[in-house]
Length: 264
Image 1 (cartoon, rainbow, N blue to C red):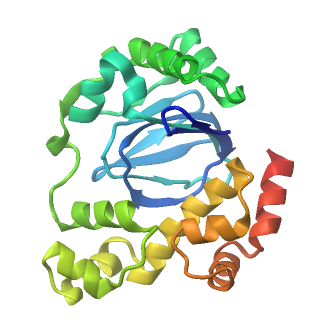
Image 2 (cartoon, rainbow, N blue to C red; image 1 turned 135 degrees about the horizontal axis):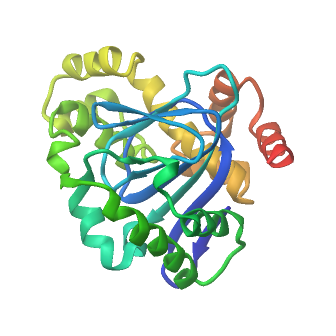
């Protein structure tokens, strides 16, 4: 489900899908993840946290995080991404702090948390106040179970953090490695080593990964045209988008959309 609230222009992403590797990234939003099948590894900052069925993870705004799946068995999870403002009375904590240990085990979670989460996953377009209410129910039940610390204790203010932050905030624009290095006040050679040694890929691969991840979300959760999605994701042409997409996913964007919607 992809909801856009016309009055506020705020977006909510809520979907249950097969879990996959997601490169380090961040966003100015609250992310809630609940494993529904198999296992999932959630990386926050420089730590990796193991999640099993029923566990719920919370990623507060502007915290670098990523996902990995080590098991050969199918892994599925509910993923909810909401603006920090939806946290209501908890917004200051979402913006200023981060959980020291961001995963709450299933045995600690009350049934109404799962009910709220499933309601958001299953609902069609509703008033934003309804979505906010369910998000706040989850936070009211869960935030007290997590020790909150200053974000600087979880994230990082080093070049890795600034690299992830820069790409997350600019991937929909056109920019080069040289331009990014200039903006970050480092040489392009130093920045290139960050991509190769930290992310195990080059600049173009990492940038395209961010663009493809955003495009996939739009393909599955909106009815926007493929051309609009491709241009809005930062690609300069649909031809380039189709080529990069097929290299990564071994299928065309249109077929990817059909298969994902057919298989839920």
